[in-house]
Amino acid sequence: MAVPKWYANGLEHVTQSASGGSVDLDTDTIKLILLTASYTPDQALHDFRDDLGANEATGGSGYPAGGFTLASKTLAATSLTLNWDAADISQAITGGPFAFRYGVFYKSRGGTAAADEIVGYVDFGAQSVTDATLNITLTNQLTIVAS
Amino acid sequence: MPFDVETMKAEYEQAEAEAHSIQAERDDALQALRDTYDQRLQDAVDAAAEKQSEWMDAEAANALAARVVTEDRPLEGDEVTQEYADSKAAEMGLTLPDE
Image (tube, rainbow over all chains, first blue to last red):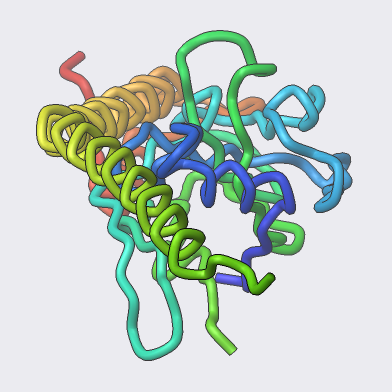
């Protein structure tokens, strides 16, 4: 997987979690929503899911609107790096094409998009799946490195 | 007249002790909250992810099966043969629905 990037506000949502209760990466409902190339990430300004606009990927069957719910999430420090990990995604997509470029991690609260904090995003490059399995590796999807 | 540093130090130590006391109380309360919710929430989220995956597999299988044409005629649009559907389902680990 390409190297994911933090949103500045996402980092704030996470680091405030101990005191402010915003985003808890290993216990909260975190989803990975897939977006088309029409989306333009803004690391400095985007902070909630409504900033993603109407750019969610569609096509075929097998992709859940709103994104994949991440399972088996962990936070662990190795050497000087804090890693956020989750189970890989492997989902059959029939029909299509299901085309996407970006993936955005966000906290799903079950309500409006404006309430869902976005954390980070990854640029997969142009991807298209038709009658095939979509595989996304989520090993250490976001890290904080002490240096 | 020199500053009364001993008194100032005592006042500082009392103020810091108050801060430490509140901090410890807060930490204990947060830990109690985590003990109550974290494992239960994590298990619930994992269960939801599994159900979502099962649901999407079923959606994908239904959609693939709906494209199957068994008649002996040229395929149109996204139509597929039973052989193609069986092959793709096996490749993707899907179970096609019964007819």
